[in-house]
Amino acid sequence: MNPPPAQLDGANVLEWAWSGDFPFGEVPGSTSGPIFGLAIAKYDNAEGIYRFSCDHDWDCVQDGLYDSVAEAKEQLPDQYRLVSANWQKLH
Image (cartoon, rainbow, N blue to C red; front, side, top):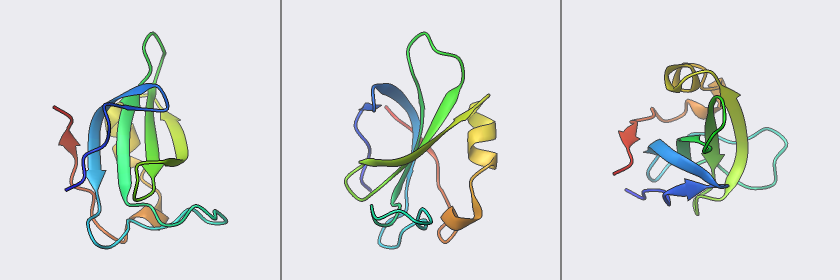
């Protein structure tokens, strides 16, 4: 396991998933490499929830804004489904 930092891009991480030895997938057209970490996060005093797609070092490659945690998980793109996401709460 490789848990994320408590914050990504200034947003507080609520839940996360790590793909392990094989990546979840890749961002089409990105030169940042494969996606190993997914994080659900929220900015202080902001509406909505963000899902961050991160490389092996938890550097953010892509993000998306959602209405809820459930929506952020349900709308995981097909290119990130090479490995199943096992979501965990950040302690």
